[in-house]
Amino acid sequence: MASAMIALTACEKAVLPEEGLASEEASLVTGSAKLNIFTSTPGDSEEETIAEGKVYIFNSTGNCVQLLSMDEESQQITTQLPPGQYTLYAIGGNDLTRFALPTQSEATSSSVITRLAGKVMDDLMMASVVVDLEEEESLNQNITLEHKVICLDDIEIRQVPQTATKVEVTFTPLYSSVCLDGSFPASPTESYKIALTKQADGSTWKAAPDQMLFPSKGTPTVNVTISTSTGNLSYSFTAEALSANHHFSIVGTYQTPQGVTLTGILTAGEWGEDQEIAFDIDESNVEFTPLVAGEFCGDYYVVSVDETHRKAVLLAKEKISYPAPSGNATNAQWKAALTAPMAALEKPAGVTSDWRLPTLEEVGIFSKDTQVTYFGETSHNTPNFYCVDGDGVLYWAYTHQNGNTFVLNSGDSGFVNIIYLRPVIDVEY
Image (cartoon, one colour):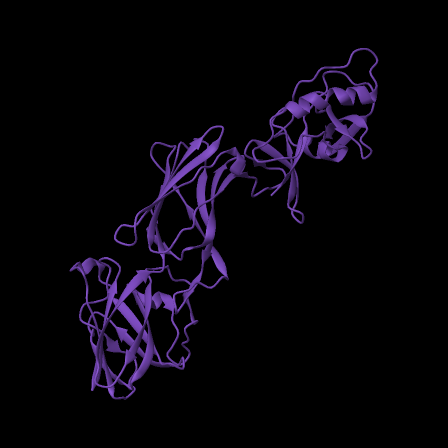
């Protein structure tokens, strides 16, 4: 009678228990071939022994004819199978109850394994092998399991401004499941967000999640959001693929005015080979999100937000100087005098549109907000601001406050050099 012995081992020292499997099913398929499944390990580290394992056995027609399970107490199994070709799909982990695993009756090679709702992701190792069982043949077969997850060890952002109230890091897109054959379904994907903790020095923010995650789908985007009392500023960069079977650490340094420069190291530990990847974030990576009208995004006041078209209008940080035309300049000459100063004004990082004069409506919005302007103690008027009407004609405008009522006043003549030039710029997010 033929017998086949299958030794299941994990990468490096992370292995299945040494003494074998126990059957999950009450009855076994009978046959003339004897399948003896046991485990072996290249090391003796009990700390890295995997507590649970399952083996799905498929026949040549694609039917799952046996589902075997192992644990620390029952670690050896012998079962009878008819001669033929079989595909074995092995799964190992420290706590497989965190995952939705297929039953024997529903299992196929493309069965999807997901993390159960409310459960924290844990290690998951998988492998497959094809064996041929014949009469009067003894077969020994090793299966080497591989981690199908990454481990996010720690994150550190340094030299964060003291005004920061929150620092968050997000990774996206990550796979959210894995198939029994070890492949990853293209959809759906998920993101992983973690809030860092402010350290004693006041400028370093850290987290050590030691968190298992499914790998990234292609090249992931890493977002670093720094919140202050005046708004949020988000930096984004594209990293190299975060492949399974690696540990991941990231260290970033906030550099004014460039933003954040991040360097990351993928370390294999006792998993896969060491890999190094580097991330750089400067002002070209800034993202203006989230944007809320009437609040600040970094140092820029958000005048308005069009959520449907994902556009927003930002106000210049302060008024800018300009050369006043001489003599009895026309409306068009005054408007022309404002063009060069606006063109020379530095744009928000990552924005390609140009500074422009606000509309009458936009002046009516920001001139009511004392976060960006003021009202005279006796006149209850704001300063005058340059703006344009719907036809592009230059105007001055100011807001008068009468109790809780605000009235916008404007005109298209009588320009003087004390009128404020405070342009706006359109951004997409």
